[in-house]
Length: 348
Image (tube, rainbow, N blue to C red; front, side, top):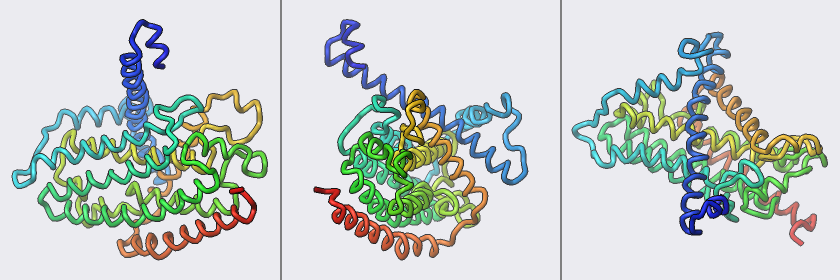
């Protein structure tokens, strides 16, 4: 893209700057549109499972319902509690929303379509996504209210618990692929399953790792059955209780952007990313971004399915699953995977 702007007569510095801004907008704007549509999809899936209709009034089939809700929220008054820390109170949703967008910089939508194809892309996502909890913690503390503060403490404990397991799970994938570069991890999955399937998930050693990653992803994004940070029966609305108008909407946008990111990571790390499901030449004529988007939608449907059918955990069950089951299991699989790769001469 830099070369394109250079051909228009720009200097290299200006061409690089404009190309970078254009790349950011090409990711951020469709992502915001995607968030609006997956909120609609989320509500439709819940409604179908509960034998209801869901959004069906605003626009054809209710497709414009999310935009109507966004407009309603935008026109509401922003209320800042008088006893809150006003600067941090307003900063928290901005931080949550911004961090949710940063991770998408290294997501490869196809072999060439990636904003920053860096060699430590997976480490970058792991580092940036772990910052998301700061927005929740700051909002809970700055609200100067008991329920948001309890929610902030829960969120920090929950994030730490499952980040550790996800870290060991990522180590298993990195060991097998031999790289932190997301594009190279995708290419390492070509024909990996039974010689014809482009996915790590068909590997007997990596399938249990994916199951743990999927469940940990639900906990990491505070989705049911791990939505203890927003438990309405206990905490009203959790860390968002005192928020209104666009500050409330920014939390929602950040939350759904993180859910989409987790769906994308499921597709990239275990299901071949932008590669077609089968290593068959005609399927490669379909653009890689189409395959990736279909896989993201599939995983988002699974997230919605779980949310509509699985009851919420108790907090002690949430902690026990993270520390007493997933942590030792993920560490065990690091040992097994690395041992197998060493024994089979993979590192030679």
